[in-house]
Length: 137
Image (cartoon, rainbow, N blue to C red; front, top):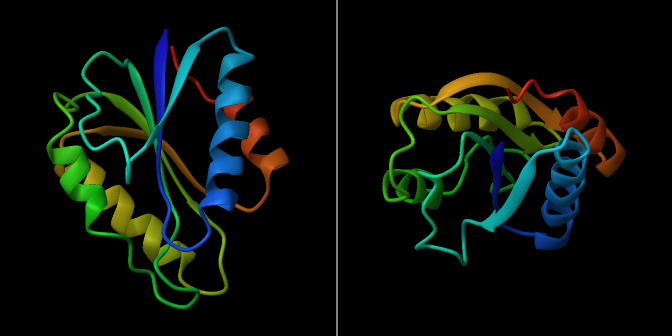
């Protein structure tokens, strides 16, 4: 099965990229083909051909739960995503991670995506374990 992991970095691109790679590695261990897409740079990427989509966001600041506006713009212009099974995740920060996850999930559901699971990820090891346990099929 083809899966995509889309991430949006704000402050520390390396941290969310590391979490994304670990998540993709865990998903690949289940035998799936996984592509990593940088939502900030790969603006013309289409998600239509993927059966499963994971979307990850780093909140804009350590205390607010705001996420970049680019997330909704990207999902709106990325092809047919309605009805796709997905996973939402945000990086752990001091206070606003829960609000950021709620906003991300709301934006994904607005596009018609079917959320199967969501979480706040703190480490690469945790991301890999989640990737191994996601029910993609």
